[in-house]
Image (cartoon, rainbow, N blue to C red; front, side, top):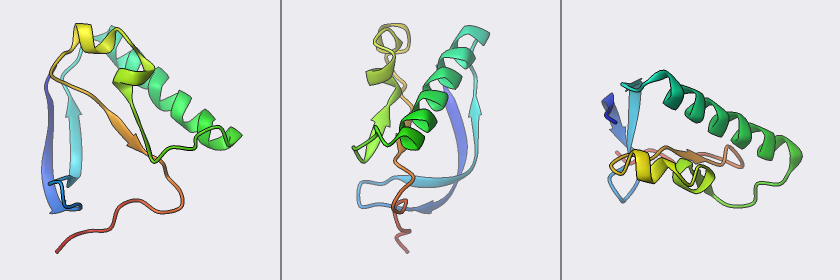
Length: 87
């Protein structure tokens, strides 16, 4: 499953890029899986259950890696702050 985006800035020492947009080229069933993951992340933040720095879709949806071995979605915990830009 390809993901596309336009790079704006490098934001970490590991080559992470801030993107101005993200494009998902996915079937409807995977859109729903991604949406479920994002909702679960938001719910964990609001409930105070999320204690790690980030969460992987592959950890949330154990079949994701079998179905899409070359892609993952990672959500960075929104607090206290997202990564700073590297200039």
